[in-house]
Structures are given as structure tokens and as C-alpha cells.
Image (cartoon, rainbow, N blue to C red):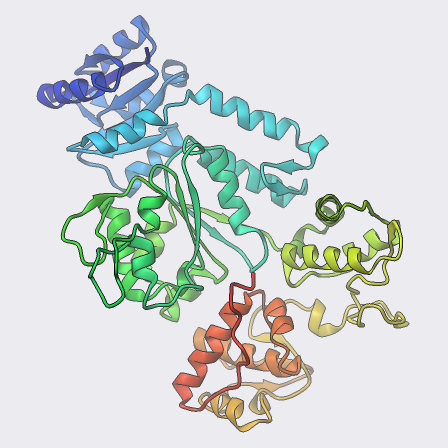
Length: 513
């Protein structure tokens, strides 16, 4: 039978906690001071240690500072004084979770059901790290480059805790794969992992989809509906493209993160949210705050443990490994094995991959389909010189300036046309005219004056890129490092602001990334 130790100077609170835990088939001991706690641990090592922060002879954190004392115990803070700073400090010292007093039975049951000795989790993570050189992957993530090694280290530290994770990175870098890996090596692995694309749900339905609704709460609500928070109970909820969530719903999400409770649409009864939140965005978080896409208070609440994914161009040494992995999976699916020639792998490593890992996967799939035999050469792979695939190679293999120069500072490399003439058609021209004389063309670049807002800069860059690629939206989105869905959303916003319709084509029926 598992053993629990409750450390709390409030005798009534400790007694109540002991009764609740004993009802879950645990043996329970109590301690009211740090000295008593150390004595109890020496008598019997607990499987779970529920620890109050404020004790007569010190702070509960002092026990965590002695790793030998609690090395084989899962530590859960149990306090009425928990806050963001406390959570971060507890994470650094090895706490797995925290409960806010008064603790109810459902909260406690969730924590007790996920008990796993820290040594067990550490052994699993160490095994993944040890096999990285031979296997080439860590969980669902592939790559052995230095940037990915840092990502693996971060995942290893945060997976065993319950803190909120905020993943940032360009579109196509694998943010959902990181979230899935965190879940799979966490204590919540046996419960659901649900991924929600906040940009792919209608603004009129997103609240109902996330929090659920009661029967009759609005027109068409013919039955009660469980939202993502209920369906992911005990597990992990991944909120992708969080900056596409309507601001009024961001307020409600913040309340859930702060209180741990939510209500279905049309209900007056709140429910416990026993869910770990992992959020992600392909925007720069502070830029999203500046243009009103993300509430600053929500950013600080989500950004407890940030993970920034590197673009594929910053880890090109991983390209052969990733490409071979994708090719193996496609070969198994299609029933015919193929492999790359050395020239093909060399060409893959020379390409900058503006669409990141997603673009690489799609390129491998196309090359597999077009290959004539068992070998895949470089004929149908993307080229660094920008020449179309399947055609004769251009004499120069050098990267064009627009593809190779970084988009930093006040100068953003682009096409050859002035930003004042971003669009020849009247509609796009009307949108661009809302920021007159804001940008000019100098040496194939867009020059933005000091004082230009982030929103204005984003608009000019996006419309200029769209014009440069002849309104080819998939290519524009890939070059900008955003999803196709995000591009369509921005173009619609610009059209609404200018009052002039913009031809955005047929919006994708599902998420493009």
C-alpha cells in the first residue's frame, strides 16, 4: 500500500487531509514541523509528500533543498499561499505539483492517481538521452544538433512537473510534437492529450468548444456538450495559435489558469479543471501583445516555462536525419522502400527551408512520388537557387538575396517593387494605402522609418511578400514563417480595416500547418 506524509502545522487541516488520503487506500503519517517531517521520513520514505510552506521552524521549501531526503518521494506543495513565484521556485527544487487550500477530494484524487517516483521518471528521461546518438530521436522529436539538445534538456526538466509550458517558434517547427513529447514522459501520460488549434475554430463557437455548453444555452444547443477542458481531464490540453483566441475568451482562460475552475456556457456551476496547459504561438509574444493579439497578463501567466524552438535553417545538420525518418515512414505506408542519393542529401542541406520541418516532410513525400526507381536523386527536391524543381539546374547555385538575407532591423529584404506599389489591383492597393509613405524600396529592400508600429510593419511586409510571389499564398506563408490560416486571417483583417474587399481566395477548409 503506498505511503503518504502530510506536513502541516494546522492540526485540523492535516487531520482532514489524512482522512481524505486514507480513503484513497494510502497509509498516512502526519508531521507539524520540519523536525517532525525529517523524523517521519527517516522512519518510512513516503511515496508522496504533501508539504505546507509555512511551518513553525522554517519554510517547507527547506525539505526540497535536501535532495537526499526526498529523492524517492513525489513532493506536492499544499498551501493557501501559492503564487507564480512559488511555483517556479518549487519547480527548480523538484516539486511535482501544488494544491491550493482548501483542498477538495477531486483535486487530491487527481494528484494521487498520478504518483510516480521521481527516480522512475528520471530513469526514463536518462534512457531517452542515452539512446539519442544511436536512435536520432528524443520522444517524438528528431535531431541531434546543439539547438535540439537544449530543447531536450528543457523538456526533461519540465515534463515531470505540472507547470504551464509556452512554446514559441516559426510555423512548421514542430510545436505540437514538443507538446506531445512533454505529455508522453509526464505523470499525465495515461490520460488524454488534446490539441486545439485556436485559429481554426469559429470565434462564435470557440468558447463552447473549449469550456462546453449546457442544453438550451444558445440556439442550436440541443444537448449538453463537454468542452476540451472536461475531455482532457487529468491529461494535457495543447492550445495552439493562442494569439488567434478572441480577447474576451483570453480573459476567461486567464481566470481558469488562476483559479483552476471553469463553467460551461449557460451554466452557473463551476467545475474543477484538472488539466495541464501547454500553449503555443508562431508570433513573437511581445509583438503579439503590442498589436493586441495577446493579453499581457495572460502572457505572463502562460510564460511560466518558455520553450523556443529553432527554425530548421539553424539546425541544417539535422536535415538528413529528418528526411530519412520521413522517407522511412512514407516507404512503410506505401509499401515500397526507397533511399536518398548523397547528392540529394547534400541538396537538402543547402536549402534554407522557410517552411521548416513541415516543408521538408512535404518535399520528401513529393520526391518519393516522382522517383523512378529505388533511389531518390536531387531532380525533384527544392533548390537553394530558387529554380523550379524538375527543371534544368541554373548555372549559379548561390542563394538569392531575398532568400538568404535575414529579416532583421529596419530593413527587410524583399522583392524589387516599392512597398507603395504593393499591389497593382485596386483592392490590395487600398489596404496598403492606409500606411502611406511608410515604406520605400532601396536595393531590393523595404525600409521602414523609426516610429513605425509593429502592426504597420507586419502589414507592409505581408502584403509586399504576397505581391512579390504573385499572390501565391502557400509560398508567401512559408516564406513569412506563418501558417496559411494565419495569412488568410491577416488579409481579412486588413480588408475589414480598409473597408475594401481583398481577394484572399478560398480559405482552407482545415488548418494548413
